[in-house]
Image (cartoon, rainbow, N blue to C red; front, top):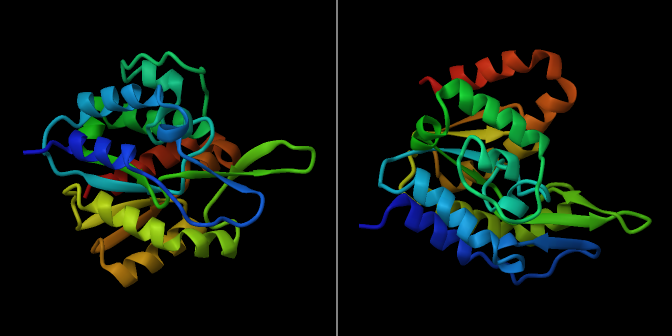
Amino acid sequence: MKTMADKIIHFNTHLSYHGKLPPGIRIMNPFAENPSVIPVMEAFYRKFYGETHQRRMIIGINPGRFGAALSGVPFTDSKRLADPCGISYPGFKSYEVSSVFVYDVIAAYGGPEAFYRDFYIGSMCPLGFTIRQPGGKEVNYNYYDSKALTAAVYGFMVDSLRKQVEFGLNRDVAYVLGTGKNAAFVQQVNAAEGFFKKLIPLEHPRFVMQYKLKSKQEYIDKYLTAFDI
């Protein structure tokens, strides 16, 4: 029988998007662009998902340049990949502010072993996007930042979410990171596709770290309360 790790690794290493994108937008596929990410990603999932235990899904937006686009693991930069996850990362050392909050939540939950036994973190779009600003600087771009991009990748996103659900995830409840546009879109997709019986939106980690840092513990507690169902 395939483990959860087997299914996740197969999904990640077979991700591809062949459609057209709006002008100026680039898609990020860390597993195709940076093959050295693959053994790191495999080591992570083999360590924490090497059985068939059913998990609840946490649905992010899409990978960012300094998080999953470098580490191959959602909301996990190289610093947290090494500690507390215990996975060595030989590439570019990264720091991602959302990862800080997520791993504060994980620590409060009981640590990576306890957390990842109960949860799988994915994304509405498993590949990331960037756009070039005037002057040439490349910055993160979200699937919902333009209607043209959302329309272009809609089928890819729905198919990708379906494949993740088919890992054997708990379909009674899932959590959505972002209470605004991401929550609205995931709820729209879920109403059409029936992936989960219930969705619980939670404030996005980046929002908490940028705008609610003084209240961070309150948001950690809110996550833990939502998880305790």
